[in-house]
Length: 67
Image (cartoon, rainbow, N blue to C red; front, side, top):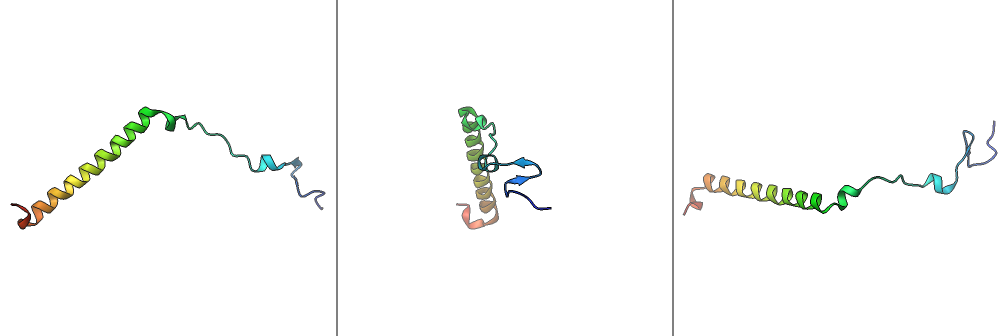
């Protein structure tokens, strides 16, 4: 049993655009300015909270930092 064409697979003739087409996803969430601003606030607040926590830990741990 041989295939008559390299494009024939299981009885369907695939063309180049069908093989390389990318499905469209609904990415409108990323274009909403409210979501972007909220995500940026969360990132900045998380970074500042972790930096301040680390600073408090260092001041408590090392006595010479308490002047």
